Image (cartoon, rainbow, N blue to C red; front, side, top):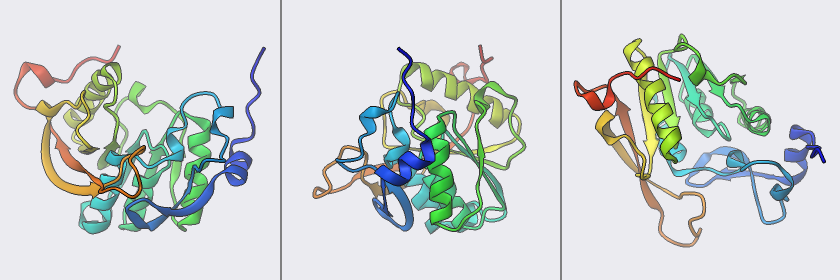
Length: 222
């Protein structure tokens, strides 16, 4: 039997609640709660939560607006759009949020409206395309599995080789390509699943660069 999915925008408005993002009171997002009924959807609803790597990048942009001011920014695997929203609030000239999940794209559009910022939502899998004509790629929490980490490292390597600057946000997940990363900043953020009453964890912002080693040469995407 084919599963019929609800209209994404209507579902989010009806079942998620807008409120300040965890550790990011400057940003309002539609967020999951115990009665959201996300189990009715196919796939994992990453877009309904704020993940530590994205939260660190968002905080970095808000505290260091010169990092993105006047730049064309790609929020890669944007989820809720929190990183792109922070970039827009910090003065980016253009923000593109790339997401293949239609519910995530709906959430990004709704969240952008909540925060009164202009964001372009892109449905294509940008990692299957040549590097986009942007100044900065922001990649929050994109290394959470071995296969994805290898794919993302290859894609970001090709973008770096094309002259695009890249910032990565991550709390230190197992598949992080540390040999390609230089730590830039560290922030207290709460990851998805961490108890709200406990102390927040830490996540770092890294600059992605290709060292002169065999490990991180730009790899051909399959």
